[in-house]
Image 1 (cartoon, each protein chain N blue to C red):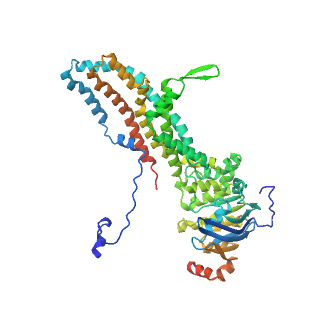
Image 2: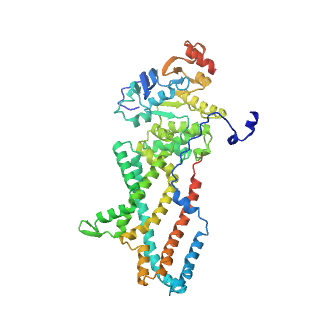
Image 3: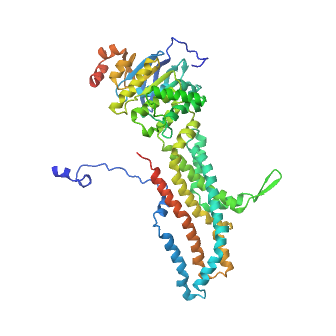
Length: 252
Length: 294
């Protein structure tokens, strides 16, 4: 958290207002608004192509928006004058395809950004990286290369790598979609522990059972708009919108 | 109908329209090395034998004897190798060193975010990749001064050094293309991951992308080294005393007898082949080892 930030506790940590985005003539986000408070765990669900992934990629400025506003800790993300690197230090992201650096070991993957980007002392970062790898239950795999790890293990290294930057918000973009069913659980357990520690998490997911268990709030998107949202209990058991009902009917 | 399905896929007949896969032949970046390495191991001894026996065949119309031709060649060999071929190797080394350094930056310029840099790099690459090498050599020879004044000191620029600069230009442009291709071959997810970890673009390039494609660049880079070595005799046209110039001078010293032509130039051919053939074999075996596993 930067000192001169206008953001104060009690305000939403991530605030999305009326965001619109198009790829060429195709509008993928048609005015999306949502607020996320510190420590919230928010799941975004919806059919493929509904703009879920695009939305969370806009939060750390990996994708730009045409209209509306996104603020993280009070700072406008799509302000052209914004220091994108400063923003990305606050927002961690985990991808569907892990995207570990294949030429570095697990430990080096975790240590790289804090050392090279933040310029933190190596010993300090190494101690933190080792404890993070322990936290994601990968003790003993410090010196393994990504190619030697299973998908689930790679994804947990990716989570540890993001956490090493000590972000305030974590984005998860369908992080279990590329995994074998038996390794999905180990990744979900890691995320659940993270959420229990009070990390603000925004997840795009297809794991309904997981969403129900861990989320504070669920947003259902379809065709670029938020169709319905609410706490998991009301959302799953008492959906109002016919589109939500149809989607849940197919999935559950 | 049911019989059709017992046939292997390619033998099945159908009157339905079928969309065949589009095949676009990719340009072979290792063409020269592939061709050279495909020659069998006995090519070198066979070549040597042919050239050693040539005088025997040519003796019919000549006053030279086989022994005399071979002993003349043997007499000149130390000079041709130590004063000639060594210079060729030196030229090829320096050319590739300068060309590689300049080529890496030019290749990075091809993927720059700045439009101006990208256009400039594109133009430079196209210009030097597609110009005749001899033209480039002549231009460099005639435009570079023969000496440089730095402060009070006068540094002479020998002709062979100018030739190195001239030959560096096409190497630079081709290395730039190798670098660009290697950068493009790294999945975009790597860029995104680095970006989301707050790496700057320059940091991403040097610390994450380039270390990954370094291995992939080695075989095409070695291929260019072999091509460049083969091209070094070009500089004899500019009066640089490398192996071909010396060969010509040696034959003149021996009275320009026609019987000497094939053995002397043949010797140059053999020595180039002996040097480049192992490089080509190594290039191909590295290519196999570094092949991207999908």
